[in-house]
Length: 245
Ligand SMILES: Nc1ncnc2c1ncn2[C@@H]1O[C@H](COP(=O)(O)OP(=O)(O)OP(=O)(O)O)[C@@H](O)[C@H]1O
Ligand SMILES: [Mg+2]
Image (cartoon, rainbow, N blue to C red; front, side, top):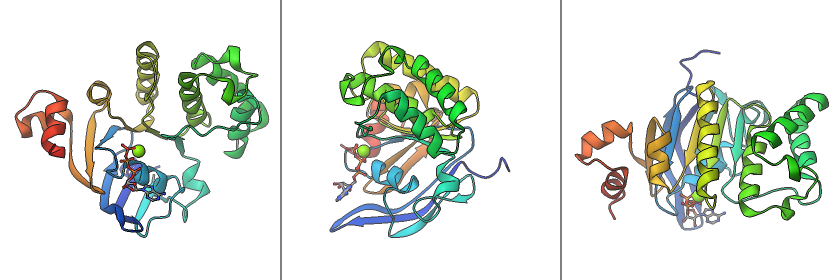
């Protein structure tokens, strides 16, 4: 695949919910192999954008491409398979064991049964869930459910991983474990897009950040460029300047 094609390209995306313009002409390119942070206040449009990319929301206007393929509801399976998505709201199958749920996810994305099972065991191990393999998701603690969401997102070896607040409610030790894991993924060439309200997380992980405000990108750059542009040192101060609160 042509390396010049962005992993994610959003062009003039618009989405209204009744009288709320959640996305208001949002354009964004994420190059292949980037580690990209999407920052912005509650209600800015981050989750709506992500749900549009994975086809859970249909934008009113605009185009979204993933590795050059049409994405969202009209693009469907070919591009969706390239994406690993961990949603902000925990949504897990309640009726089968977590191992079975991971295997089913792999099968849905075209893996053979043997590959899906081997990979499910690998992911359970990587996220320290092996002891819970036969449990139902609702028998896990909140932090374990977050880990399971990540395991599921990564199961089918996606090339673009989109994590919507992956470390919300996760303890400090686990958070650094997850950071290490996501960093390794990035080193192996996976493109990462994450949202977070933990600015130290964005600072520690992201090579590039974009701020969303009122459904549009209001600022975009490397942390170093933004520090220079605003003449401040801390990400928190950049955030306050950009978001204007
Ligand atoms: N299904 C929906 N129906 C109606 N309004 C919605 C729906 N989904 C999102 N919105 C509205 O769209 C706006 C953007 O919401 P969104 O969830 O994208 O924000 P966000 O940036 O992810 O915020 P947060 O940081 O709180 O997760 C908000 O005003 C929200 O109330
Ligand atoms: Mg959100």
